[in-house]
Image (tube, rainbow, N blue to C red):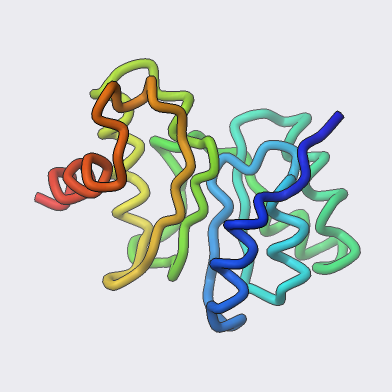
Length: 150
């Protein structure tokens, strides 16, 4: 059984201009990608699993069309995205950073997110505590993002 999209995420992004370019980082099977596409964002998505990419393309095809779904849903790892610098207004990382086996890997992922995010851009993060440790707070994640900027 697949989980429904996060109401918190959808309410947050409902207040964002639809012209915003959004990346669904680690999109899985498109749990959030399809609803974000229906909100009209300039939407991209990536996953490291080919079966998940195919499922996500199928989920967004009705909104984006077959050709655009093929172009916008790609295979990529969170630490090597392949998008240009300063490309996205928003990055949705719902569970994407949970793949980090250690703090060094998490920092690599955050560095890559920072690279593709436009100055002043936003990241919506949902992750398990184990990726950061006992200090899994928004402030701790913010400190990590500040670290990767320098």
